[in-house]
Length: 320
Image: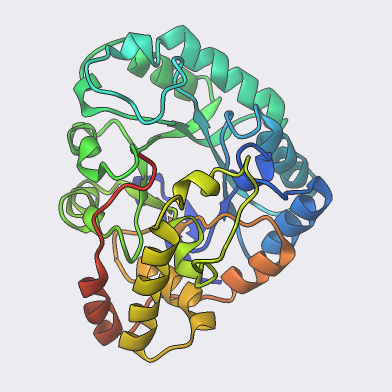
């Protein structure tokens, strides 16, 4: 396992971290707690030291599982979590005042709840689960963040940027009050390279990459015949002709690089790690098998492969 500095935090984090949405068992079907705990432990065995969860993942269920494992292990594992928007609207719509979404008392209350769920004295990285640059300089949320830092309840502060809106945090980063940003970045959605990553590098903000596999599309296992449980959010994400579109585009990548479909997931992870702004990538991992596959990946791709993958940029929003 390789380690990278998480921006100005100075934390040395594993370049592959643990995305813990799926183990919360909300919107993902098939997660079992026993297997989730085995997967978390196996990841730490293999050198992983960064776990990203959220209060909204199973209404604290993911946090409780993560906390259980971190407390039981005698390793230095960093935990990041997230405060859900008070209005429970993802992504953040424009036109709202931040006091409607992250008022100071709510920020403090949610942090206290997460600390109880995790059973930890401090959260390494506390994040807002949505963000809008309209909120810079407004509201009392920053007072709460600074208070939590001074009390030792959180060490660093970040935001999880709205889906496919990477430029919607540039103003915040430029203020210097944010230590990390979390963003969607993958072979299809390369848009963070345009404005976000240069600003992050200039201001030394740590970059946490989510959705490196485009919710499974870039694993090579989505075909026109793939089906999901009706309660699984991917049933909507890949609705209509989207599975066919994904299948064809992945086949084009396989042909372009001369790799097998079994290798596409590794290519997808290594593409993310090829950018120097990226501190860690957090694929969702609900099984030991997934952990062992993802943890075997090391560092970026050769420059010629990165260059050829630029042509596979695909601008769309399947969450909409």
